[in-house]
Image (cartoon, rainbow, N blue to C red; front, side, top):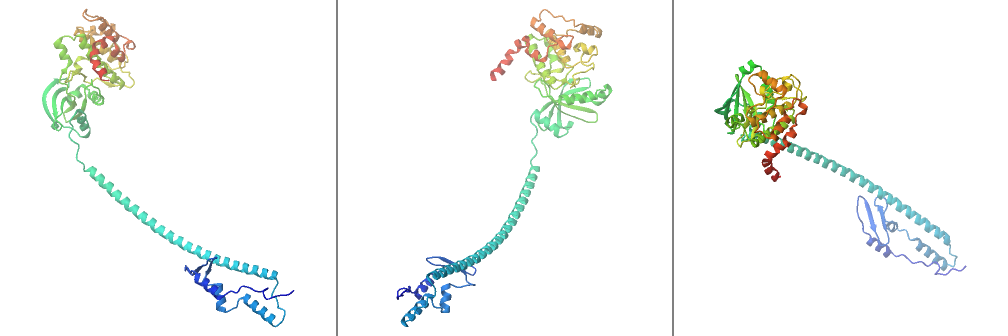
Length: 456
């Protein structure tokens, strides 16, 4: 095998190559690391452990192996000696592989070092971030507590403002007067007393005006001594409890009450028309249209009372008042009772209006009011009750037997209406709903219902 000069000719590596690589290197300093970027690859090494391989070779002045091999071969050829091959091609390939592996190991070590340093940097950064987060959370909590204190302060200021708000204006209506009665205790000094409106067994009724609101009322004055003598204190308490809770256009309002050492005062709605009984005495009797209108209003009020389990038990012309526009008002709930069981046994009311079951001392319910409505309608049309007699025993006898007789001027429809109410057996009496639907009532109240239906 002959070897020529070109066999081992290799391309010399000049120092300018190293110079170019060194000049192209861009050092980036980051916590002891130097990152040198070349056109072919990026190589990152810790500065503290190793320097650039080319720089180490240059500093140690170690010649390149390719140059050493070239010089040795040329010298041996000039001397006529057989060149001593350092290794075969296979050996050269193995050496190249070993060099590549060594460089890869060095690169992995440097990468591991860089990763470790990066992770340490990340840990430090996370620690600082957590510290900052803790500080920010503390700041947020402080701001929250500050906001809470400010809100609490503003809420307390708002409450203080509400407490110091101006007082409510004086009542200017019936409802406001009732509300005032619930808030404060009235005294006689709160009213201007006017003319007397009526006189009763236990006291008198006067026209009055509440000084603050200028609202006109009827002031009913009852004497305690007379209430005690007749044992009707509980009856007065019951009257106040029932009437003060009723709200109907045909029921007289009770706004409130107060008392002193000797008297009890009831603040009532003022009815300028006075008692219906006085009007009936003047005209002797009502025509059927007027009578039917009054009966319908009483029936509507009774329907409301019965829905509240209230029995009036004393329906008569003396206990019916007329409002400013002639509207009818049921008043005087002195004999009324709240009976959820709807069964009572007390004998009470006016003699001519007593129902048969009350006279016979039987239990009764709200149908006693329907009996009274029949007697009332008869008196409106005739001018006197149907069972009126010279003595009490005769009256009782006529009521038990229901000896009912009609004058000739009473129409057949009116007679039918009254007869359906004056039944001895309470269960056979016409219901309050049928009272309002009876043809006689509808016939004479149609004109009053037309405007209402037209508005709807």
